[in-house]
Amino acid sequence: MERRTFVLSAGAIVAGGGLALGTGAFDSVEAERDVTVAVADDADGYLSIRPHDGPNGAYATMDGGELAVELTDANGAVAGDGVNANALTGVANLFTIQNQGTNEVELAVSPLTFLDVSGSIFPPSIDGVLGVLLVPQSGNWSVDPERGVLSITDLTPGEETDFSLAAVAFPESAIDEVEIDDELLITAEA
Amino acid sequence: MDTAPTLADYEELADVEIDLSDTDLDRETIDVELERLFDA
Amino acid sequence: MQRRKFVIGMGALASGAAAMVGTGAFTSVTAARDIDVAVADDASAYLRLKGTDSHYVTDDGDGGTLALDLSGDNATPSGGSGVNPNAVTEFGSLFEVANQGTQPVTVEVTKSGQHPGAVAFEDGNGDELADGIELDVGESADISLVVDTTDDAIDVDEQLVDSVVFHAVDT
Image (cartoon, rainbow over all chains, first blue to last red; front, top):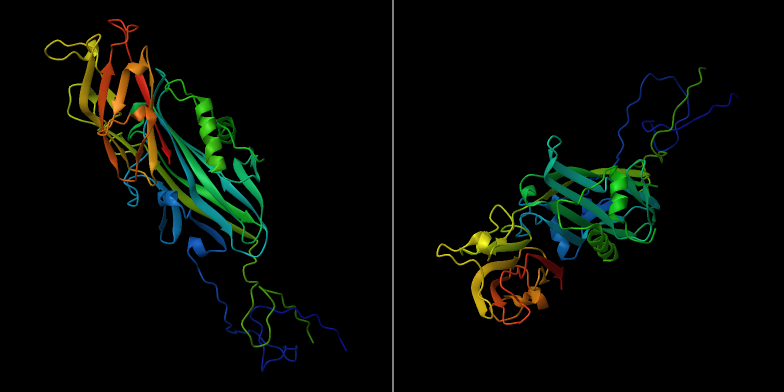
């Protein structure tokens, strides 16, 4: 008898509970199957991204199930509207990323340096500089300057890592002149 | 690495140089704060 | 009979059962998340510094950073250009410092100048900012200046303090 190679397709008919063997010709098959994929919010996702459970977690908001780092007047949970000018502001324990999957992953966060500079080249003058730096709180980090990425290797299932933030704003004219309105890319690869 | 990143690390990552001459903040103060945040 | 090739899709089908996908075994996740940071004036920033309506407050922090000037650059309308020598002068309620952040902090001040020890920032209890004043979230302190020029080493026309640095560290 001719050997046949069978490879199952996601839509292959399973008639009456057995594997379908090629008994006859057919032109098309349509079979409905249950596939359940749920969308969880960031805290409950396979890669959990959530505000730190300490007080500085209030500097991060959950908007539509997605985490946002919000150091502006749009954050109703904090009385202040932003960082002081001519100042260095440090926010420890801001957000947490946890591997809630089943594979060990390499976590990459990029960029880590956010800059907004306002001023002119001729004559050279600076109206404002705002630098925001994301600080890993993990001993297991390394930097890939080519990709502008920080990576934390070997985040095992269940393992979590926290991030802090430092902001430098100057001079006084930086007030309402410079701001960060950007995106942070978080990737986890098994 | 198990030590805190420094301001120089961040500058290298972003391929920029942050000029602090318009302010009283110095690199050492910033690096000390980065260490505090790393150890938190 | 013609051979047919079927191709495996996502997960092998068990007979009659739902297609099974390996639960939790993701191979990669990519998520872009917002980060927004603003620079606020001293009156509305996380460490609030707000000057009162005093002649000696040259910037009350509304739209800018707090600035005090008790010198000839900010002479009073009646001609005063600095504190008296060999005297103790108090300037009540010059500014408010408040914690508009997320956790209790200790606020301190370090002063630079020719005689920084001559200038004290005090709250309503007589506690000095130089020694640290604790502020809960939402709490504020009303700060007065006490300038003591009785030290022999202090001469007329000297600039006692020319700048200060406020530190607020979580307690």
